[in-house]
Image (spheres, rainbow, N blue to C red):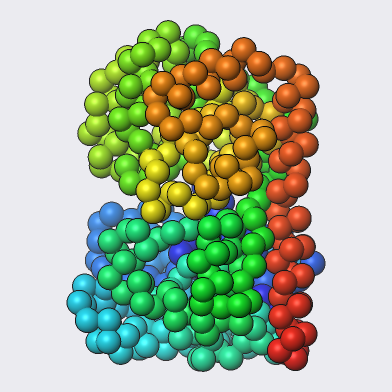
Length: 400
């Protein structure tokens, strides 16, 4: 089978995502083209760009071939055409006119790559790229079009204006929708009867509890217990007030946060609390070394429309290393992780749960967590994904 991925996320950066992990796992048995996001005009002119985007722009300016073969079955495309920044347009009707032109540019880049790779038939997987890839199903004519719903982006201003009406339309016209949480699946079923829960996965080859993980020097200066979090520090998702209250009530605990901070986090009171420390974002391959030496891992999410139904990948990563986990009581945490984690709703609840986790931890519990995490390997998730694709292809009599 041939797959073409379009996504909000770039592949081969310092952190994996759902779409990049699926693409790499599928490429072990299938041919995959992963299309990095195209450069838009605003990004091109902005000084605030990450190293991967800068490299994409530089390669395009130098006329380098944007199609790169990474492995025997995995190719990556950096689209050379610049699309326009149009999200400022207030009318969704007018936005859609200009968006079609952007899609046409984007599709032309993909079409050349698909032809070069000899993909006569392919499955298009759209990972939340609801604007730039809205018309790709019509323009590229894949055998099947799959929409991957793995986050509630409509709670954010950028996506809300036009996405509120366009994402349901994209779900409706896709051949199937696959979701990584039960909440997202229930929502998708309102628009498309071929909507399926596939779960989320972790790279269990990286998050391998059987390996010996040396304690990083950055952690050696702190005394136990170490209460740790790894991931983006986004003030729309992570509860700053909750963290502050926990740290103030348990001054003998050291709270470690590893990840990139948004402006609200950088300027928050958390930087003034002595037993809270911040460590810059680490490459995925380095993360297990830190997690393995936390006494308890936490996920102090705010409970809102963005977080209530999401499937936090970090929970699998924590559990895969046998660590006790305390997390906010979202729907997904209750439905999927209740038996192997501790759930809380406020600072007192978190403190009580962390104390219980520290007291109850044992080799037996650690082994049970690792076994639980094995259900969520990317191989297992891909088997479910491919099974659903084959099922719908058979119903629709589509050639794969």
